[in-house]
Structures are given as C-alpha cells and as structure tokens.
Image 1: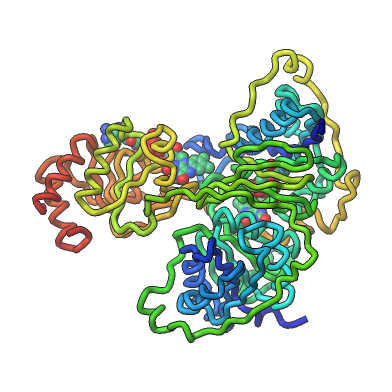
Image 2 (image 1 turned 60 degrees about the horizontal axis):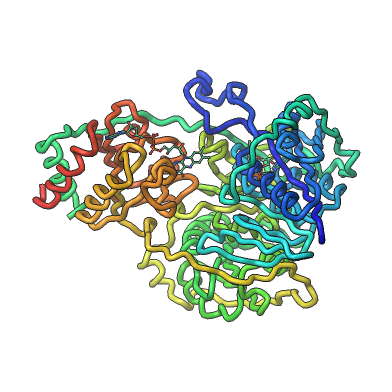
Length: 265
Length: 346
Ligand SMILES: Cc1cc2nc3c(=O)[nH]c(=O)nc-3n(C[C@H](O)[C@H](O)[C@H](O)COP(=O)(O)OP(=O)(O)OC[C@H]3O[C@@H](n4cnc5c(N)ncnc54)[C@H](O)[C@@H]3O)c2cc1C
Ligand SMILES: Cc1cc2nc3c(=O)[nH]c(=O)nc-3n(C[C@H](O)[C@H](O)[C@H](O)COP(=O)(O)OP(=O)(O)OC[C@H]3O[C@@H](n4cnc5c(N)ncnc54)[C@H](O)[C@@H]3O)c2cc1C
C-alpha cells in the first residue's frame, strides 16, 4: 500500500478577529503588538488534512513556516498534534516579501522534502490574499486543487471534493498535488497529552534562504513586485442618522417618508 | 519589446457551461473608466469550448476586443489548462492591466498566472484608480499607474497597492462592488462596437494533471445582489424561528433576506445569505439592518446601500454610524410595527 509524504505550510498571524478598542492606537492605526499571535485558522484545517492522510493511509507530516523565530510556537503546536517534523525558514532577506516572493521561498523549502501531497490553508487572516497556495503550486508545477473540503486517496491519485462557488466539484488529481484547505475539511484534532510534554520546548530545524537555494533577487523586497503605497485604518465617520422613535407614530412617519421619496411603494 | 503603457486593459470573462457570470460585466464597467483615462482599448478574455456566442454580450458590456480561445481542454475550468493558455496570450498580446473577479475561479487562476509571469497581483480590490506614483525610497516617479485599493487585516485596514515596475499590473476585484454599464449604455454600444480575435490555446502536448469527475451545482434560490430592498438580520434576532419576522418584513416590501456572519454561524439563515467581507457585497436602494452590531467585516459588504435603516437595542452599536435612519429599540417590537405601517401605507 502506498503511503504519503505530506508537507503543510503554516503561518503565524496576529489575531485580527480581536481588533478591539485596546488594539487601536490613539492615531487610529492598529497596534499589532496588542494582538495575540496565533496559528492561522485555516492552516489548522490544512494540518488536519495531512494528519488524516497519515492516519488513514500511512506516511509522514512535515510542517513548514516562514517567519520570525517567534513562529516556532505554532510549529510546536503542530508537533503536539502529531506532525513528525518541523521546519522554520527565517531570514532577513525574506522581509517585505509579497505573495510572489513568499511563494517562491516556500516552494524552495517544500521541494527539499519531495512531497506527494502539499497542504496550505485557503487564506491567512492578516494578508487575506489566498494567493500563496496557488502560487506555490504553480512553482512546483504540480496539480493544484483549491477550496478543498474532502479527500480520499487512490494510489497515485487524489480524489478531491472542492467548493467552486457555484457548486461542489469532485476531481481526480495526479500526484504530486497541492491543496488549499477550507474550514469545511474539519477541525484540527487536539494535542496528544504524551506529545505535549515531549515537544513543548522542541527546537525545529532552522533554514535560511541560502540553505534552500533561493536567489536573493527573488526574495523579500527585491523579489516583490507589489508595494503598499498607503494604509488607512477603517475608522467610522460617526453617525448623523435621523433617529426614529420605536413607536407607531415614529415608524408610521418613517414609512410615509420612504413612500414619498419612492424608496418603497 | 513594445511600449506596455499602450497595452490594453483586460478583463477575464469568467463563464461556466457557456454562461457568463455577472462579474465580467462589473469588471468591464470599471475597465472602460480605466482605459479611457489611459487612452487604450478594453479587451475581454473569453476561454472555453463553444463559447463564441458569449462574445456579443461582452462587446455590448464594454469590450472593444474579445480575445477568444476555444479548446476542448478548456471546457470546464481547470487551473493548469486555463493558466497555461492565458499566460501565453498575455505574453503575446501584452496588455498593461489584467483584472479578474475575486471569485473561486479568479482566486485560483489569477495567482497562478501572476506566479508564472512573475508579476504582482493585488487581492480582492474594492476600487481601482489610475494615478501617478512616487517611490518614497528612491524618489522615482511613475505616471498612470494602477492604484489598487483593498481591505486587509481582517477588514480593519484599507491598503493602496501599486506594482509600478512590472507588467502587467494585475488585480482580483470583489464581486458586487464595480458597476456594470447600465442598460441604456449597453444598448447604445450594441454588439457591433467591438471585434472578436481568435487565439491559439497552445495546449497541444500539455499534460493537465486534474480531471473533473462531477460538478453538483448549488441551487441558488437567493439573489441578494440583484435585490433592490434587503432586510438583514444578525445575532440579535435571537433564534431561527424568529428569523421568520425578517422574511415577513421582506415579503411586505418585495425584498430579499440577508444575514450577518453571526446569524449564519448560529444557523439562523443559510450561508448564501451572508453579507460582508466573506459573503456577498450588496448595494441595494434600501437596507434594513436588524440586530446587527455593525462589525467592519459586515459593513464592508453593505455600507454603499443608498439608504440604511438600523434597528438595534444598543444606541452605541457601530451600525448606527453608517445608518441614515436609526431606531433604538427591540426588533421584536419594531418589525411588526413596520410591517403594519407598510401594509397601511404609512
Ligand atoms: C495590508 C497588506 C496588504 C497586502 N496585500 C497584498 C496583495 O494584494 N498582494 C500581494 O502579493 N501581497 C500582499 N501583501 C503581502 C502579503 O500579505 C504577504 O506576502 C504574506 O507573506 C502572504 O500573504 P497572505 O498573508 O495573504 O497569505 P495567503 O495567501 O492568504 O496564505 C494562504 C496560505 O499560504 C500559506 N502561507 C502563507 N504565508 C505563509 C508563511 N509565511 N509561512 C508558511 N505558510 C504560509 C498558508 O498555508 C496560508 O494559509 C499585503 C500585505 C499587507 C500588510
Ligand atoms: C476575517 C473575518 C471575516 C468576517 N466576515 C464577515 C462577513 O462577511 N459578514 C459578517 O456579517 N461578519 C463577518 N465577520 C464577523 C464580524 O466580525 C462580526 O462578528 C459579525 O458581523 C457579528 O454579527 P452580528 O452583528 O449579527 O452579531 P453581534 O455582534 O453579536 O451583534 C448583535 C447585535 O444585536 C443587537 N441586539 C440584540 N438583541 C436585540 C433586539 N432584541 N433588538 C434589536 N437589536 C438587538 C445587539 O445590541 C448587537 O448590536 C468576519 C470576521 C472576520 C474576523
């Protein structure tokens, strides 16, 4: 029976779901430091997909992240859930990478492990682009299946169910294949108690851009065609709405006004 | 190499089973504006098998040129086949701008094309403008660059992104935010305002590693984007049963029912009714928001409604900051009164 070598790309992100008053600075910009750094939600689904493959068919699971050393925290979490191997790609040269450069660096790292299956989350909750997965796939020149919801293996072929927006598609993808995984795949299994003790201080393998054979010109700012020209925080203007009293008179008057200006009628 | 600043502005004309989606028409509306600033033509890229009949609608919708690629291998969307054919076409015809819908198809195809061409791609834009750009580090200036405006960081910031040094400039654009040409403008253009140019697919001998076995279409009974009036409910509605109140109000107004993500997560309404950053973007003539707090991710999908009525028990709820009319009160009391007033015409 065939077993599968899986690689999962995971990203540490600020928890943008927690942008509250405290996370805003006086000038209206976001205080990133006030936001907890978390395991990107859909990357947990991606890890679950890989662990499920390993459990069902056999194989290995390697997790890779590109980021600052603090990102070791999510690598340890992945090990506690059942990943076999963890890799941190960290390098000053990677700073300022847009999705083109990020996907280049990650694809160079992924290639080292010669995987049958690569899993990414659909989207990271900070950059919010959903571009890195398909771009790694293009660079590996392998089958790419986005919006994965369900998976089954049949030898050298993956049978995948994916959301195409207007419907649900079932396709057969030849290995090697890359998937971007949505929350529909199912939640990440909990830590294994036994592994928590073993991995709570585990040190991942650390690689820099040179070690994975990256050309400098394709990394970081140098390798990024896009640049952020301007950033504005979303600050609401503050309401000058017309207040309607919640009684028959107020509501009757509102409806009459909407009929008069042809909004309803 | 030709002067890329003379290149066309392209729209990827997404179709399935020979039927064009709504999004290409929205993109064409924007592309006409960009192209007229630049003094160049608008192109639509139409790919598939037996899709030539779609070309006339694209011309009426704003395309000066329809770039057509037909090949049996393009019958259903498959990333590698579409990517390969489109990359060859872009290399050959050298457009300066290519925009895609931020749909499932667009968000699969566009990154792969950008990766192959090693150009920039901005995700999920809500606006596109032509303007000048000065690189703050080098002081270099660029004229007539595409400014790509997009929410990021979970919708908490709006970033303007440029890619001034690489061709083409590419972006995906959210559904529902750009305006198609109106019926009069489409009619005035007619189907003869543009030409169809057929191109080779370059797919002979290219191995496509994915085979589509089956597609089960979602029965989309909900048409939020087309609705003139929308009644939307949030967590404040309290239960699935109570959501019927909103359906009653919508029925009295001839409108559609939408919801916040919390309402969807709580099972009050179906996912296809979700309004906001991760749902649909709507711009109805009237939006009645009931028991929705007004998180930025929700506002992103509805704040361009012509008139917004907010009903909420909490006077400080952010929804009131975008509302034109505010009713501070319990929706269980207010909605029945609204229905009664509508039936009695005021
Ligand atoms: C405000 C703002 C706007 C931006 N807009 C754009 C833009 O429009 N276009 C653009 O090209 N860049 C943009 N960027 C840069 C972009 O955020 C970074 O390139 C980022 O490293 C990757 O993009 P993402 O967060 O959108 O990831 P996504 O593409 O959403 O991530 C998808 C998946 O790829 C994998 N992945 C992504 N990053 C990593 C990582 N570091 N390590 C391991 N796995 C990873 C994960 O599996 C993840 O779930 C923007 C940055 C900012 C701050
Ligand atoms: C990346 C990301 C993407 C997201 N995308 C979306 C999206 O697309 N769409 C979306 O909607 N959200 C989205 N969200 C979630 C969003 O942040 C909010 O959590 C969500 O919109 C809250 O929904 P709500 O207003 O219904 O619920 P709540 O915030 O719980 O608000 C309920 C409101 O009901 C009021 N209320 C309670 N009882 C009554 C009553 N009897 N009468 C009147 N009012 C009452 C309360 O005062 C309160 O204001 C996203 C979040 C993230 C992080």
